[in-house]
Length: 139
Image (cartoon, rainbow, N blue to C red; front, side, top):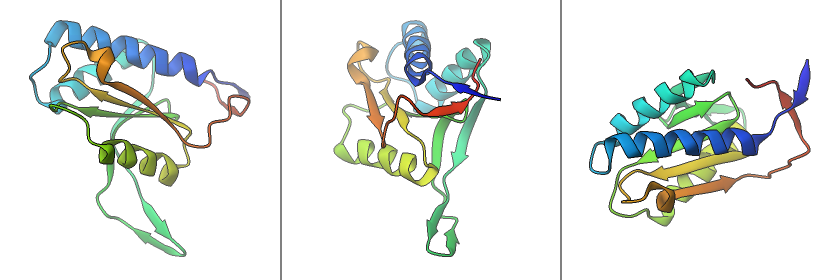
């Protein structure tokens, strides 16, 4: 059965989990630590989470396995890229948008855990966002 999924609800819960992780760990760790803890918090909420999701590049009839990987894919619908760096670069946003396009997804979050207040490091990136689109059920 197909039902409407509120992508805003999913992204809101991802952001809530990111804030929880950041409050417990603070800035200054490796992004892999934040990634694993964020995955753990999302699974506690009942979400299906894929870590290091391969992102294939298809060019005409050629499928290239270039080693692109998305940090987290939540419920098969929302990509999350975790960073832990002094500041984000425009290429970080471009990378997430490229992954959204290659995976034909609408919404992604770029989260920089190196910020003193993590909400200052959260960016929502969209790719042909259509809030009326029907998607598979979520928790």
